[in-house]
Length: 266
Length: 359
Image 1: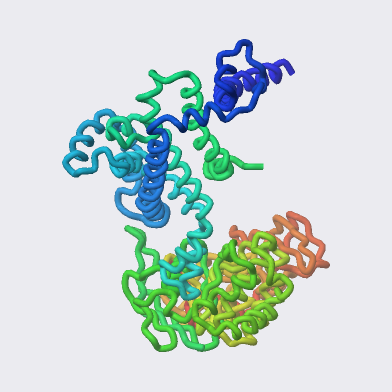
Image 2: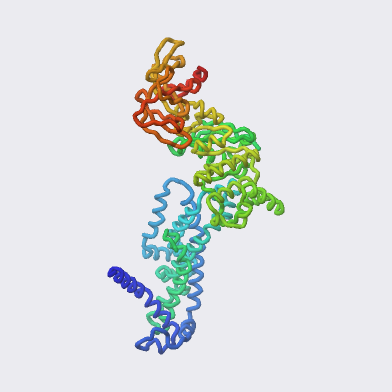
C-alpha cells in the first residue's frame, strides 16, 4: 500500500512536469495581456480573450512562416512515405543479401549529426538554387523522417500476413493489384500514423530550418529568431502554436503508436 | 477440370535441397493428398504448382498447358491456405466474390454464383458479416467457398483443417469429401495428418526429405508400405518392425521370432525386418503351434480395443487385442501373425521386399 502511494505520487509529479507548462501556455495564450503579469494566477483564465492571438497573427511574417511550416511538413510527409514505404515493404517481404545490415544502416543515418551536414548542405543548396525555399528544408526533414518511415512501415507490412497477398494472387490479382486491394487498405491506419509522425518531426525541427532559410522561415525558425526580442504575450502565443499541432497529432494517432509497438490498447 | 503433371522438380533454398527430382501426376477429377512430416517439402511442392514459389528446375503442366513460368493468376487454380487467408476488411460476400470480380464476371452474375458457393459451404447466413465476427471453422468455410466460387480447374489445399479443433476437423473432413466428390474438381491436398490422408484421398503421395517415396491408393499405402518410413508414418500406432535372423537353404529361407519360424523370402540376407501392423496379430492366452510368446508390459484400454505394449524376442511390439481380454503387466501371451499380412523389408535400406506379398 505504501508503495502504491509512492508510485502514485511519482506519477503525479511526472504528469505535472509535462502538463503544467502546456497548461500555463494554453491559458496565457487565451487571456488578456494584463492577466499575463497577474500574480498569483488562478487555475482558470479570468477572462477568455483572443487578444493575444490576434496580436500574434498581426505581427508581420507570422502567417508566412506558418504557411511555410505547413508546406515543408506536407512535402516531408509525401517524400518520407513515397521513399520510406517501399523500403519498408521490401524489408518486410523480401529476402535479400545484407538485409540486416541495411536495417541497421537506416538507423545509423540518425547518428550522423545534422550540424555537420547543415553547412555543406546550405552551400550545395545555394548552388542548386534551392536555398531559402521550402524544398530545401523539406529535403533535410525527409532525411530525418525517412529512417522512421522505413522501419515503422516495415513493421506495419510485417503485420499483414503474406498469405493474404498470395491468396489474392491465386484469385487473379497482379502483384500491384494485390497491394492496392489488400495491403493498402489494411496498412492505411499505420501509414497515416507514419505520415503524422513525419509531419510532427518536420514541424518541430528548428536547426536545419534556421540554417537553410533566410526569408522563407518555417514557424519554428521564425520564432527562434524573433522570440528574444518579443513581448511576453507573443512568446506565449508562439509557444502555444508550436506545441498544439504536435500534441493534437500524437493524441490522434496514440492508438496506432501503441499497437505499433505491441502495447495492448484496451 | 484438368490433370496436374509435375516433372523433374528441384528446389533448393540456399544449401538446403527442399525438393529432389519430384515427379507427380494427378489425374483429372482426382483427389490426391501429399502426406509427410513437417519439412518434407510437401508445402513447397504445392506452392510451386500454385506459382507462389519458383522451382529451381522442372516443369509444371496443368491441363496439358506448361504453366511453369506463369504467375499464379494465369494458372486457373485456386488455393485454400492453412490460416484461411480470408480478407479481413471485406465482408464474407465480398471475399467469396473477390475472384469473380477479378475475372470481370458481369455484375448480375456475381450474386448468384456467390450464393451458390455459400450454399455449398453452408454460410448463406454469414454473407454480410466481417471475418472478425466469424469462428475459425466459419472462416475456413469462407476460404473454401471463395476458392470454389471461381470454378477453378485445380484446387490446391495447404493443411486447410490443421487450425481447427478436433471435432470440427472431423466434421469439415466429411464435408470436404462430400463436396469435392460432387464438384469433381481436381484437388491436391497437403497434410501431415495420416488419418486425414486416408479418409480423403483417391491416392496418397507420401513424401520424405524432398522425394515422393510412395504414391498409391490409401489401402495399398497402408497395407503395403514401400518402406519402413511409410509403414512407421502411416497408422496409429505405427507399424511394428521386428529385426529377425534368417537362415536355411535357398528356396527354404526361414526367419525366427522367438520359438516361431516364419517362411522368409529368398535372398542372401542374414537378417530381415518384419513389418507388422498392431492388428495383424491374433493375441492368444495359451501356447499354440504357429504363435510366438511375448510378455505384457503395458495395457491401455482404449474402448473399442486394448492396446498392448509387449516385448517379444527382446524387441518392443504394440498390438491391439479384443477389449474383453483380461491382462496384466507381466502376463505371458502368444501372438499368431496373419500369414497374408507379413511385410518383409531390407534391414539396411528399409525398402519393402516385394516378392513376399504372396508367400
